[in-house]
Length: 177
Image (cartoon, rainbow, N blue to C red):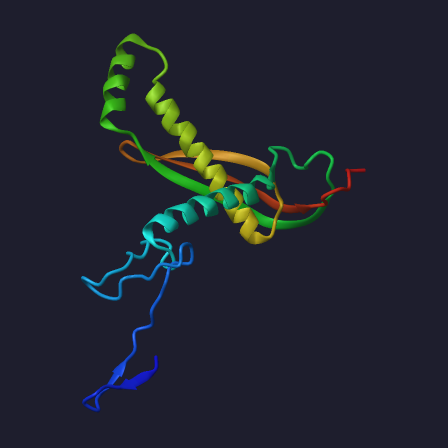
């Protein structure tokens, strides 16, 4: 940071004026200063533009990962395996809530599906798949074969769902022979 001489001859550091990458408005330079608050997660954006940027990044990430092919078999039909990269994995731990517990207690008496738990596990599986795709992408893969799931109880009321498979690179246009 550059040093500047003040009127009294003392040196002080200049605080750079930063502005939002989205709207161009200046950020606050200190407590009580006029200007926009920087976004907590995307610091080069103001709060409003940062929310929009996070949404744009989420869509971009979803589009990027939608190209990752998945299969429970050992190949992707219509594509030739170019390279086996390694294990891709993703997981999440989820806890049940008190409302689901009340419903589960009633269902234990009368029988039937516990929809709160089914929904919880479905969301956890999707999160595990998403994280596995992110791992595969970071390894340079464009597909994952041999996809499996594992579920385990890691504490009272807490379940872990893992998705894993072999990250591979397949040809984009070459069918299997």
